[in-house]
Image (cartoon, rainbow, N blue to C red; front, side, top):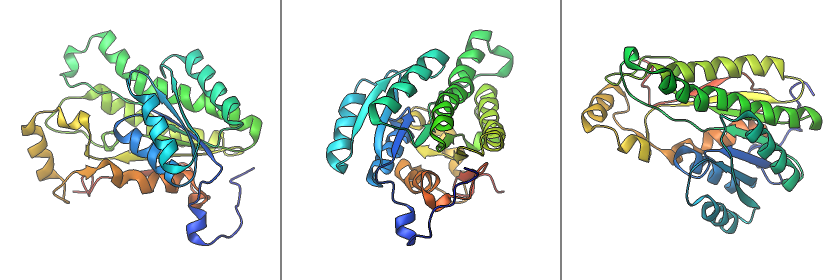
Amino acid sequence: MVLFQPENKHVLKAFDLTGKVAAITGGARGIGLDVSTALAEAGANIAIIYSSSKNADAVAAEIEAANNVKAAAYQANVGNQPEIENIIRKIAKDFGKLDIIVANSGITSHQPAEDYTSEQWHEIMQVNLDGAFYTAQAAARVFKEQGFGNVIFTASVSASLVNLPQKQAAYNASKAGVVQLAKCLSVEWVDFCRVNCVSPGFIETDMLAKLPSTWQDQWLRMVPARRFAASYELKGVYVFCASDASSYMTGANLVIDGGYTLP
């Protein structure tokens, strides 16, 4: 399969994920929760991969009941290569296959670059970059055996600019790495899967709410849309990337930011 060409469908059918199996890291909260919900609403069966969420099983049960799909939660540390490999294999076995992987897990910290300890730097990279690669790699091994698959990374606008006023060199570097990684993998793996990125701007999540209001005020002045996005506003772009509606798209980085990166 070199960019498998689906049959010509009614446009709404092209977005249909009925019968597909999707796994989402960090899929129990924040952006990941809306991704899990969106793919289920489009008909996919859902495997939520979580690290520390206390309610992942309940979230999976709620998604399953609301959308008449199969959903389950699996605990794994994406920064541990053997662990995420084993979980991805288990998901493919439990569900009978794996069509879509969304490498969405991410963490951040804010401090001057000169003050990072090696442990603090490594922690960001281990989740955001190493974990994204290990997740995609494990899924790609399944996809190569199957002959089909779809990788979607959650990157960030921080991959292409320097955010102000916060100092977050490690986070920005990790997300820039994810975007370039996606481009590399899209070429390497073109015979058996597509690989794309979504780069959100400022999204109203619990993570954003915990940051200083003075920072948020400054960001609002810098976003032409003059508002942040609700996380559900990302649902459409992930369904697009996961579905046949984007069948000829690979190596793309879709920026969803209300114009923040443009001025």
